[in-house]
Length: 85
Length: 415
Image 1: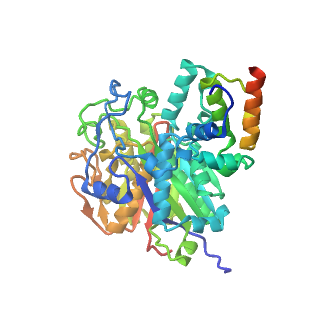
Image 2 (image 1 turned 180 degrees about the horizontal axis):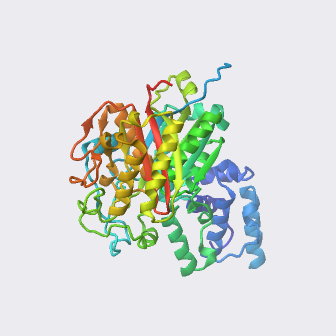
Image 3 (image 1 turned 90 degrees about the horizontal axis):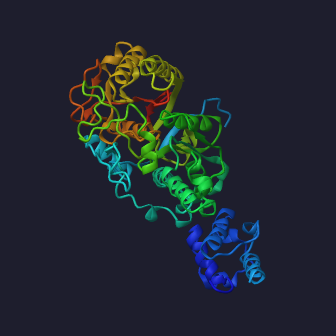
């Protein structure tokens, strides 16, 4: 993950960290739907945060796992990538 | 309905994941035939430990039975519980549409003795190997005693009274009693029972400190309670879940009432003080019989705790005689767990499943690997014994001093 986190990568992380299967194209179309609608709870999002920090050398702000929608999370992660670059 | 008649707690569904069967049908077939499946421990990372013989659940593939979203959050002990709960609900013919109609009328109660040891070990290894940031967030829920109750209720959408009993091995019976009380107080359905997964490296090492653990390496001789050769107990994994339901509601929806949970008693006599368990177990039996309004002579079969050390076995044989009087020497006693091992809290729930099936089939299953009992009990050995069974007594004791007794009545039993 050199640049920005994409919806496609987020879908893969949802599967890996929380066992939630989401078709990437569908996630892209529903960026403003709540994570709960995909079956992802806050612990699952925390697992994704850990995955990004541990395996992609990112440092995310506290409370990143409180994001409610994929768009909110992607914006937070990507603004952070830019800020940290 | 203005009937003042007390609500009765009926058993309408049974689900089993056991070393001798991944379904209730297979479990019963193996149990009634007295098949012993005790064998060498083969779980990864356990081969070098001095605990060599156990009852492993083999061929269980959780990914076929449980959604991935729940698998990543849970330990093997919860996988067993979810699979057994599914079976029990299907057996009771309670589908999602039925339970969704009033989710607050369905609760879950489980007992647990060791929690999610395998999951916990993996995360703790990450903690010490890589650092705190590498511990997965589901560690916070997966290894707790409460995990199975929580996940079964979340997965099924059940919002009724839920609970977890952490009262030692005998807690398996206490969980069923807890469920029966909830049903008598007004809850429609409680999915209750216990399943354990103590056969992983960390969990096994925890057990090595138990003096009464059998360290034999011959599967046919490692666990032989009530004999002069008794040398300790053999652990097992697995367990059972039972659908406990208000009899009236069950009859209304034309479900089969397989049995009734009629009475329960529990006492505590201190860890490893087996001689004292005589008094505690006898008292638990008396309390259970009293609640069931059951005379000792009405007990048609006893499913024994069968701990497997001379002192504990003697205490149990004497407790049965103390509580049942002369009938205690005549009533058939069995311990099918000698063929599968003791699955801690899951063990007495498996005995309850076997007791219900025994009453339905009019058949007392035998006690595998035991041929020469040395106590004054009519222990059923060798092969199953046909007998009309209307009332079964299941007893259980834990390593830490809990004793419990549960009285089950046949499904056709009238008040």
